[in-house]
Amino acid sequence: MRSRETDRAGKFFLKRRGVGGIWQIRWYDERTGQTACLSTGTSDIEQARPALLEHALKAERPPHQPDAQLATVLQSYWVNYAQHLPSARVQHTAQASALNIWGDVNVSDLDRKKQLELVEKLRADGLSDWTTSGRLARIWAAMNWWRRDNPQLVVPAMITAADWKPVLPDRERTYSLKELGALFNAAAAAPRDPRYARDHWWRFMVLAVGTASREAALRELTWTQVDLGIGRIRLNPEGRRQTKKRRPTVPIATTLARELESWRRDGEHVITWRGKPLVTPEFYDLLVETAGVQGGPNAIRHTVRTWLADYGVPSEDADVFMGHKPEGSATGKRYVHRRPEYLRTVVDGVEALYAALQPFVSRSFAGPELDEQPMPDSIDLSGLNVSTTCQLGGRRTAKLLTRWSGLTGSNRRPVPWQGTALPTELSPRAMRARNSMYTPSEVKASSARWIHIN
Image (cartoon, rainbow, N blue to C red):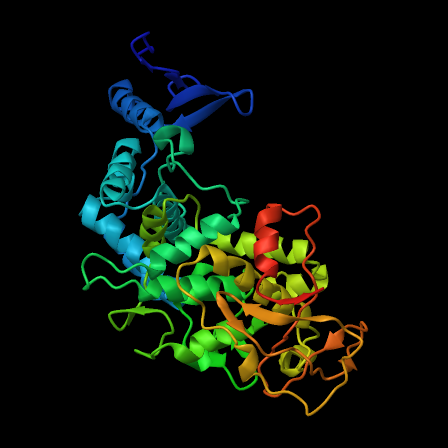
């Protein structure tokens, strides 16, 4: 029997090989530019036709897309990878949000509508778009991690900013002294409900200014990482591997040291709320809302770095302080932070920042009193015309600053008397106001903390 026109299905058709031979399924292959063929294994046209239709259906059918349950993906990601990350708690919170809002869904179900549902729910809960964006990214990181061993899994595209119009703080934003003061004042104010104390806000702000650290490092900071004996904070805890977001060892300025000494230790962590560590950065969203300012927690970090640059701190010291470069060689960095002069210029700049902030903050910092500083017995400063009043924040003392160590450092700057291991300096060099982001009045207010020399 001869092949008819009906012996065709789409681009596939039947053709006999030779006279009385086997029927073949043939089609044009665009990849090779030639006609391809597949034997039906029969010379009977009635048996060859079902084979043609079956082959055409199989070829035209879209490839099978294996799916996976989202809960299974997230659990595997957590057990085998995420729980060992430094950001494990944040990852756990993101996964919990996904499962609570989406419920028992498959990966293929996470279309644009489902993702916008998550965004609207998190916004309704009072979370900032910055936090929401981070949670979306962590959920998709889990699915992409699963796909490494399951390449057949198709992960839906994550929604973009054009889909949900996030309002994200500027990464390069810096606070003015007035805005920083508003944050401190919000943390110092008594809450309407005494059950919701704000002590963790105050501790975070003091540490953020004194260490210029990322908020995650401060939330995870424990008392074992704080060494008041040598005046150092080891932001990277023992056993945690360093990542590209380096956590350095930073010196403790005098004001920060006094603050740390005055804080009650409610647990293992330095910053706690009701005795428990802070799990997410969401507390900062409420802090900025209460203070009436904009920006994320890293804006404090950028502000401190800008202040240090305006103050004249060498870039090499500031980069080590910020964690942008290691402290030294692979061996030497274990000991360099124990040197008394370690990042001395940074300590000066940070202490000056606390001083500049004090006029804008309603609560006094637990800073150093001049009359509490140990002094050498006698040094003749008769050649200096020193004013008879020394001002420290809002407090005054009638004692003259008439005793200095008389020593100089490697850069020929005077080194004050060091009666303790804590880094202190009674009279830092004048702050440079040129090209500063701060107004002249703010610079003038900051200098009021130190000694007035006529």
